[in-house]
Length: 393
Image 1 (cartoon, helix red, strand yellow):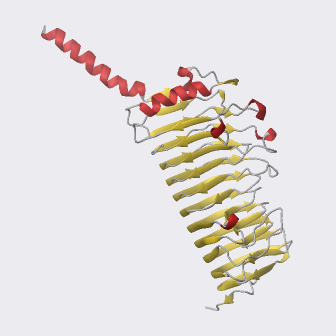
Image 2 (image 1 turned 120 degrees about the horizontal axis):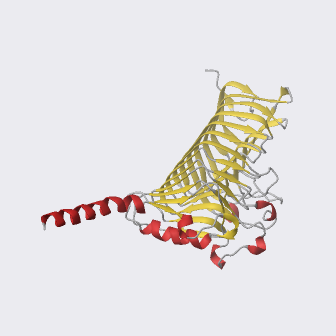
Image 3 (image 1 turned 90 degrees about the horizontal axis):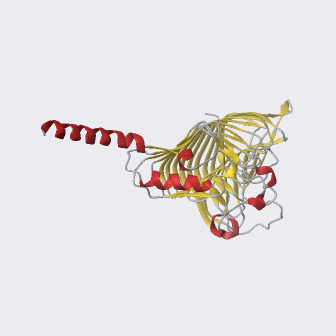
């Protein structure tokens, strides 16, 4: 009898030890995903997510294996999940429908392709590719490729994104986000294909990324704060943009932004702050440091009159821009005016600081335009910025 009880105990113990290991990895092919690039694998992905989100493993892994191409229509990965850590590992290729007419989505899910919501402790990684087949979408598609909303402690690393219909990566209402070693690639003429877009998010670190796209490489809009961006390659694209802010008279804020060690190559802008007339709020406490411009159209730009595709009248209200520092910015400009600071008469830009600016135009001296700007400069100033008081020491 004792021998039998010992055997039963060992069998039970062995089963308990095996269960977490077995149930910690959830491979989508075990849920019916084909991975041939033509079969819709969305249902299999959703089945796998149900088990991942309900798993009691310490870190359940949603696995998309390599050497396969998975066609997905919109998928919605909703939390909260049972585990405080979820790993979403993409080693294969995820692709979208090439024809917008074949897109299968419900009415309120058509603007997001791969969407995570309320998934804290999310770790998205792998060597895979997210390919949006964007060419046929760019004339009408407003579908964000990867969007994470209302989630905390999120990491995104190692993946490649290409040719997505609209924005490639979006974080909305998130806290404590780390993005690293991500590659984003879309043609320079692809519209609205922002690389990384941040909205209402705080404590975000973006580093060691290469972004080539048709719109902002990185865009930061309302209610973002404590953002660090470093070691980025951008271009083609529209640079790293704060805004736009204040459209339709909205009150919007962005603050505590630190950008360093960025190379812009052939981009429309370098570091840019853009706000609409009539808006309210503030863009403040920002540092842009260690920037290299290689044939950028506007290496340094503040535009309080942002109004694309139309002419907008100056208004009494404007988003207040203050406490902005530009340090050690060098390279070449595609335009004679390498520094453009266009601020409002009623709400001028305040406490703008520049140090060691060295920008040229076609081998000759560049120029600077500034209007309604208060601040100081020191060190090498090429071009000199007449609105800023030059400090000799």
